[in-house]
Image 1 (cartoon, rainbow, N blue to C red):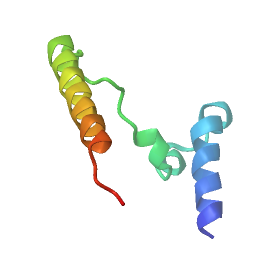
Image 2: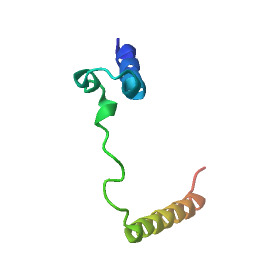
Image 3: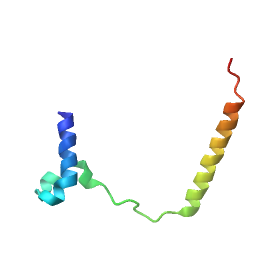
Length: 71
């Protein structure tokens, strides 16, 4: 039953514009309620800072992994 609901939602999302069912039927699919992404412009400075923080944490994790004491 759940698989049928997923298939119906996917079919409405992919073929809804082609088949043109009533809007009430289209509203049953969660894929018709997806907002446009990105909703606001990308802030590249904060993106680069977060990328640098993630890279630093990854390096710290790899260094800690090298110095582990597992017997």
